Structures are given as C-alpha cells and as structure tokens.
Length: 313
Image (cartoon, rainbow, N blue to C red; front, side):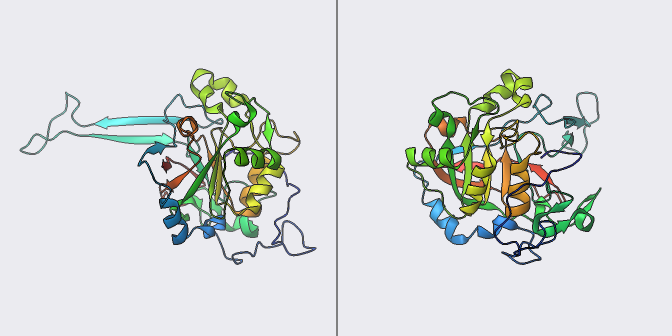
C-alpha cells in the first residue's frame, strides 16, 4: 500500500514462529516453508457453497470505487488514461465496412482507488511473509514470489461490520481506533459471527470524504488498531478491508510505529488487506453477510492491484 523508506518491526509474533528464534529468521510454517499464499489457503469449495446459500435477493454491490485522475492517492501515486484513436473524425476508416476504433493506455500506480495489498507489499527490515528476504524475490520488473497474480479467486463469505452505526456517528473521526472489544460488540449487535475463511469489511463512513474533501480524506483515517488486527487474524480470516485508504487507524496508536497493522497482517499472518472499499450501500441495506467475489487482474509480479470486488445478497 505505501512506499516507505523504512518499516518498523511490531511486537506481535505469529504463533507459528519457532520458540526462542529471532523474529526475522524464524519461518512461518503453518502452510509450509515454501508457502506463498498465506490466508488464501483457508479458502475452500465448501466455503463457496455455504456462502452462495446467503444469496436471497440476487442484489449485487460493486465494492470498488470509481477510479480516475481525481481519486485521492498516497503520494506520489497518480492515474492517467490516454485514449488513442485511429478514427476520431479525422482518421481513415479501414476495411470494406469502414471500421473505426478506440484504444486506451493506462499509466497508473496499482495502489490507486480500491486495491488489494499482496503479501509482498509490507514487511519489516526487508523481511516479508514466510521469512522471505527482499533480495530473494523483489526486482524492479516485479516480484518473483508473493505477486498478486498468484492469489486464487477469493470467493467466500463476506461480513460487514458497521462501525459508524456502532459508535452512533455518520462518520468516524481521523485517529479513532477500534480493537477487539469494539469489533466483538459491533458483531454481536448485528447478530454476526466471524468464521474461518471469511472476508471482514468495516464501514466507517470515511469514504464519503474522498470526493468532498480529498485533503482531509488523506490526512488521516479511523481504523483498526494492532490488537484488533491480531484478534481478527486469530479467527482465521482471509482478508480485512475498510472504506478508508489504509484500513488501519492513522495516526497510529503509537506514532513511532509505521503502519504496524499492515506489517502484522501481511508479514506475520498472511492476511490480505483491502482498501477504499465502497461499503455505504451495503451498510444502508444492512447487508451484514453476503457472498464475496473477487477475481483480481493477474498482472504478473504485482505488489498490489486495483480491484472491484462484488458482494451478492
């Protein structure tokens, strides 16, 4: 998600780390020392079938926001689309049927708008998921391991926790944090149980600022704290997302820790992160659980990628 000069290590260690070993040299062995999929291993045909049974209305929700040149993005990221025309009214049609066409070239960072953070996105001290050192898989032309093209389709049960509703606010405030106590209480109030292989999304109301006040939108955000992220990872979820640009609370609970939730989820747990999710319509309809469908673009070696997941109720 973010290009950083340095990443700080965090205090949470995955339970699978070898006892007494260094955080940076102990392999994550839950799915084997060669594993590159992390929590995607929790997906299953049984989960797909069970989640499909949640469809009662046939209503679909696009969870991706519209992405364009004015979409707020973490600097220096930007977006530029160029339409190339061979027949814009001045060119010559081709073929006996006088065919004309338009094509387009997209010049963009893959971390703009709604996005999926892969396991190669953030680590600490250049160590990433499953004890992989950057020198083993990172190059300027792409990742040789942990690329987002390797992630299987994420089709599973999705859960929406409406934190704005829980706190009784139309929109949470920048720096407002929620952890396991609030997550459990919100889930209970909505009658929701979070299970193995689920995708958990948070509605905070923050996304509404993206168009009305993009500077305020990017200056901070409400979000999950370190303890809350650790709690959800312990429930064996596949991915966690929110309607904010970075999922976790910003400024951080401890300002000296650089995006600690990202490091914990991606490096230590192999849990994927979804950012800038469009959750307002689901929240308005009280769509607390649904079939979640994501087939991300398979750009080889990508660290992250622009996405448009679908919720189906």
